[in-house]
Image (cartoon, rainbow over all chains, first blue to last red; front, side, top):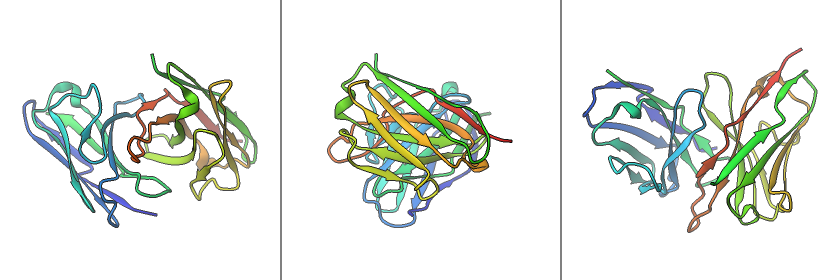
Length: 107
Length: 121
């Protein structure tokens, strides 16, 4: 199984800050990397697919980058509604695996 | 509106069985791969299983292989997860998700709200 390591596990930042969450795969997964946002009590929501493609309807302040083993999710200007837990997920091979999540809070 | 609605969760004793359903609407269900993903209370997301558009190809996480069966009825726009020999560690919210398999990339672009499975005596 491909292990996905996310960091940090939690993060607190101020409105307007630039925030970056990283995800490292245990082997190369090319660009088969997706990012999801989950708010408490809600289902996950797709933000980014194929490492850098923005899902329709997702604000352009959110972006994804990386390939191979190292990936990043960046929020260019943090907004209050961005408070959530973020998960990366590889779809290079089954079993698909998720990172353990990054809990993002607003200061 | 594209929508997935799970049902069938509940309380079951260890060793028991449950069948989850996921009813799809607002899109051509029969043309998409589908997944089940679960989340134990306070924990992260765990992929469980996937099925291709015609139901002939299925894949499972090792933790459920041989106990769970994914299937679909395209005439009813419904995805299923038959869960047998349930264990305490299977307790979770179970989500179904749609996969557009876009340009060879697999991702989950629409999720249901989930159904809760509790395994306890």
